[in-house]
Length: 127
View (tube, one colour):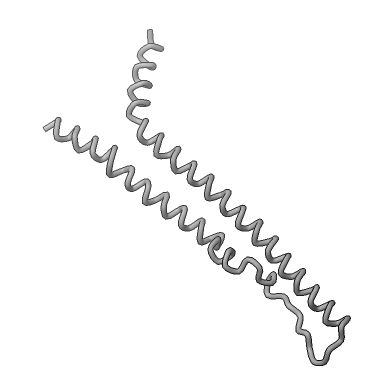
């Protein structure tokens, strides 16, 4: 009976729990990707910032045309710069979360060894 319990524990510790951890961290990574809207920011990379644009109006005045054109270009460049910062922040946080997920998994797998080591270290400290 004890051997069966040990086998179930090992299966749970090395297979079931890491799969649950991976599923949880996968949800966190998916949330972060959607929170920063990285896919949408890449699709709309050169769109005007906050959809701020100017209309050319009727008639043709070269001065007004050049002013409105340059204003629209500035709005698009500003949009690309702001989206770049948001994408970089999202990817940086995504990398940190991946590192935290791997560290959590490594700690979980090393936990039985740490418990045994701590027990023997405690016995050594008693003497």
